[in-house]
Length: 401
Image (cartoon, rainbow, N blue to C red; front, top):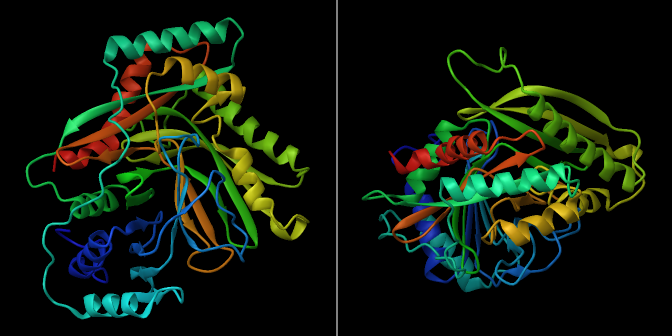
């Protein structure tokens, strides 16, 4: 890092710990919560927990960092990175080591913490999945037109199309500096850097909460609609097209539908309101449930499994939209529009899981960036292409520094 996100986060310590994990084929998760003063670093030095199911959020469940694909399949594993080593810079560089770590691993971590030498160049994990196919403007606009036709024919009410774009890494690109830059540029976002043998290395700054729970309250949101932030258009002055309002309302109805499946009628709904996410504006509705009024001890986990993939990344009805994407989108999203975040950290019962948007997959000489757009019957292919271009610039800006 050129400059730490706070004075309490010395880059040399982060680099040494990351180097330790990567040398031993371990996994790394580095994240900064929205509005948090400093990041948290997690290292997994044991084999990962792989499961086709999203993680359990109950307090007695394992602690770790969830990294889950858009759809569970053969090419992308659902992972929970065990919390073997957690260094929380927002809590005075508090270091926690798992009791499951063998003594030699504990000793290695302690040595690294007290070293002063700067590590050699970091060898980040490279994805075992093949590079995704990319779509040019004509191909993406054709996909949008095809989706709009299917919507107007009554096959779906909404579908979220997406594309991948490849960009060369600039000379001297430093992954930890890029994380630091995203933290500075996006104080309201969940900024993350994940590197695991089964997934490769991913960097992102997402604005969208999927599930948050602290044992007392459950929170989620509906986020949809996009327009650029400009000197003339701000969160206070933005006007929204009917297409955006309709799209956001669909996502909100989807969340309410999940509540109804679990027989939840007592919830607070706030919004929609205009919010800023980097260089973009979105519509957001927030939902809260008082867990004292919920009898099921697995409510948060059940909601996570019902919500993902939400209509904000797939479409409605869910099965029809996902089937359309499987047939026509033309590439495997793997972890793009999946979810990620700390589970049962920093304490049992506290989990904050986000949709993996505004992200890129890092390869040795290039980055693969991802962006999508929600389509309704009123969508225009040229405007949807421009929206993906705006979203690609959100995280892609670190390739220009």
